[in-house]
Length: 123
Image 1 (cartoon, rainbow, N blue to C red):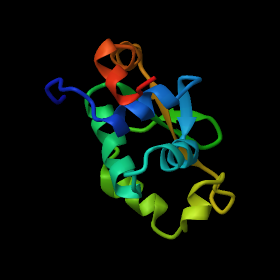
Image 2: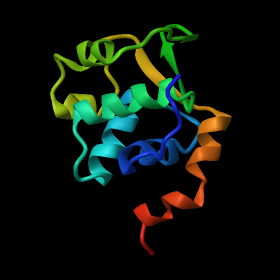
Image 3: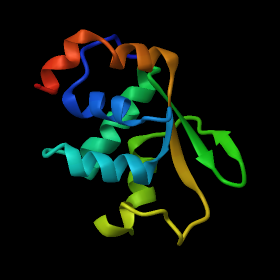
Image 4: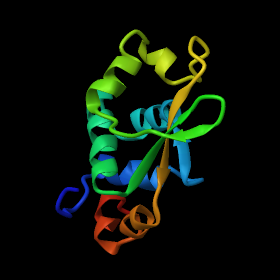
């Protein structure tokens, strides 16, 4: 587990944008790309892995039922996305019958609500 540090805007957006507590990768990708100007596929993947390492997010594989995803790496997510264009990454992956899903933990939700992140969203 990594030492605690302040999240950057992209990492915080992923936590706060996961409204129902769990979102599939394609939803996180689409929303983040639309809202965070500097977001890229690689930066979203790196942010998700960091959030998992910090225990702010858990990963599951939705494959005929939700199963915990252990030892997920940036390479796994990059391979998952490698053959899909931006438009395809924003939609449910009909070409495969499973998707990574990310669940915000109680620890992640508590971090997301801290006042220190208000500066990212000026009124």
